[in-house]
Length: 159
Image (cartoon, rainbow, N blue to C red; front, side, top):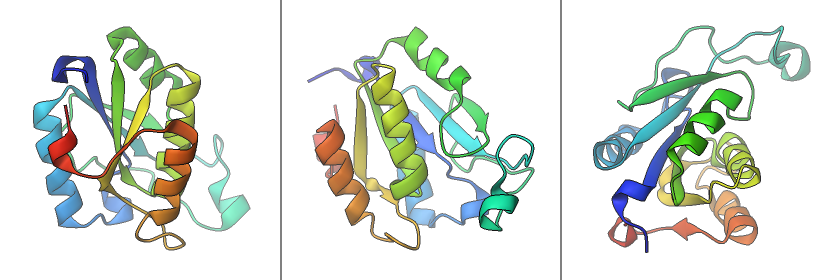
């Protein structure tokens, strides 16, 4: 198992737009104190990602990350921005712990992007919330385990 210095925490879209439960914010805040941490913040720019045109809904144009992390990266759409991937690659962690909002969409998209970049994503099953389609994130956990083979469901199992 890796030590905590070779582990980075990625907090996905824990922001006012998505009204995360206080317990999720508190959990991820505690983890952000233990590990180097980054977060994504989803903001709306119709010219970059046509949310309004395609699904009739948009995130806010301005928002804030609710978890105090070392660095926040703005994204437009589901995938983490290239600047975040470059930042993580420069840190060269043995694994990236991933928690946050919309486990079946944005968190899953982050997992695929991290995997493709060789960054070994690990889902924090106790620190995610699904969408209205997968509120308890059961589908997301199963998909993550199938694709990435790395899910931690108990905080006691953290490095």
